[in-house]
Image 1 (cartoon, rainbow, N blue to C red):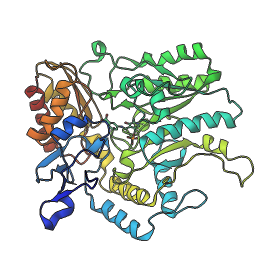
Image 2 (cartoon, rainbow, N blue to C red):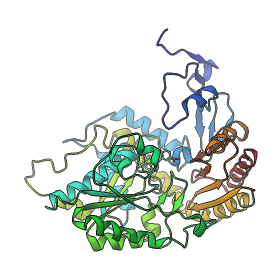
Image 3 (cartoon, rainbow, N blue to C red):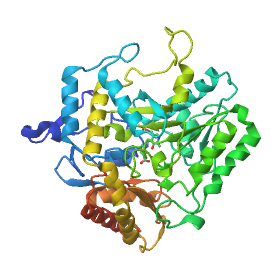
Image 4 (tube, rainbow, N blue to C red):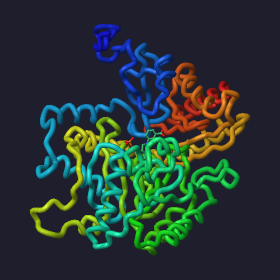
Length: 456
Ligand code: PXG
């Protein structure tokens, strides 16, 4: 059999948008039920603003900002033009021992958005690389400071920090871990912060649960602070179904990390760049971590990019020793890739010029009311969670067993309602681009309601 994949091109005048692969086998799709997809594909050919379009031209509302990343919507002209211009001007230049101007400019712009003295930006290409980079910086920091026994990494149940070995070690999603051996040694986990009996149907951050941060005292008592390098948490756990931090929880975690001389890392891969109505969730919560990870929204997802923002004292700790010697033995060929930097700068301009972080904040009450009024009274709905421009709804499984209804929701939303959603088991999560209008919020929440009812 030929290994050349044939393409059937529909409409010669718009070939690039309408090429339909007729052999779906070669692409082993990530985090996808491959056989179900290939039997009944959900194919996307182009995108503009709030909408995707199928190869046949059917409109699909983007209920998820892609994968929580296209915060300014799709096909935005200033970003498209910036990457076109950049590709022609400087396609690639290394950032090991050389530099290009936009890398420095973007780092300064991100540092200016970050809270307090988080002033130094290390670039990579994804959220997974950002998590592993942050953990490595934390380990190296203690090493350079002469406290090399501080090696334990503390994550949290139900946490998601990407799919690298560091990230799955501190992460808390069982299927992401159990197939992959023993992971890194010496990690431990805080309990997750979700308790349906105490928190169900909370608007915004739940009142109950700040005390769960105190579990760090138990972990310190067990291992001793002299062995612990860092704690990493998401200010809002996105992947496991939108679990906002309980009120006061992050502040308590900060106090305990200070008390025991442990670095605090916020994984802001989802919560960064306006998702919670501020440049970073750290600002929303008034809590300054030592390290922030980011990705996704930094380039509006137009080019792959991730990164780590570190406090001044962390960077300064490394800037010792002979000046000709590399201070941190870490980096990626594509760290601060010129196309990603150009996309990032154009994206940050767009966020500023259109006031999208402020828009996200202003829309939050409208969004919260819409999701609660559309979903609360549907039979079988068990909980609704919302924070910033994100929301999730849990519902009872149907007779297909756990997770079957969730899967049916993705399929039905796409084919019958023209809507893209995310699911985790029998939970739907939605998180639209920050350009969403009030009318589109109404439409989106109604579509989700119909999908839940239709799959009961
Ligand atoms: N940290 C967090 C908090 C994330 O949400 C990553 C790290 C990893 O990023 P990369 O760029 O390596 O994928 C993420 C990614 C979902 C979903 O809907 C969430 C993510 C990715 C794909 C799907 O659950 N988050």
